Length: 288
Image (tube, rainbow, N blue to C red; front, side):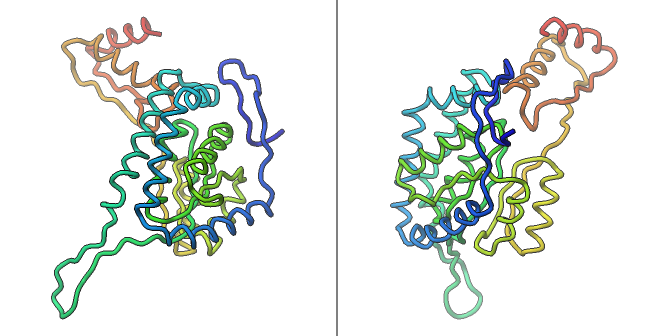
């Protein structure tokens, strides 16, 4: 059975399967990203930002198609899918428009002779490991600012998001990111570790479980690499009192089932005072 596959969440039907990358393909991807980085970083920040801005334009042009892809992959509604495409578009556009200003060098006061400057420079190849719940948003906030800065991207997406992952690579390339500058990799857990340890990879960003974060964080520390970890949790909603218990219950319900219930900070637990408990639960049952 292929590790990467699109499976209709409503029916369980496997719609398409994808072969995982070989070790040789992973090494080639890292080598390509490293080679392209040396060219991409030499372009002006405005050139890079123009390319990223074009990515946002393509997201808008292909909005309906992109929405259908993730609805079939992870189960959110079409309306929610369109909202996510638009959110990702806005993030990408933001960095395309404002990115150059955010990374302008500037002088700071110095207590010794000479000048003290803050400079923003790219570092190289970055690896992103992203989850299924917001397939476009998670990538947009990682890839867009780093491409404007001059880094290149290796993106390992969730196993169930193969179609949208491949489509995003195609969009970045269509917009003008050089081939190899943004690459989707159908990598295994062992291959993620291999890429993270590779001296050509300068940093890792993971959105995932605490277990995965502990592994990535330990590895990054061992190799003295930058890492960004956004990890999961069990979030409580505490209801102490309410004038309109039913309204509060409806809010709790809506937040819990939003995005197919697949939101890291949704209310997995509801802690309700005893005197309103029965009314609160009754409204949840009615909504169910």
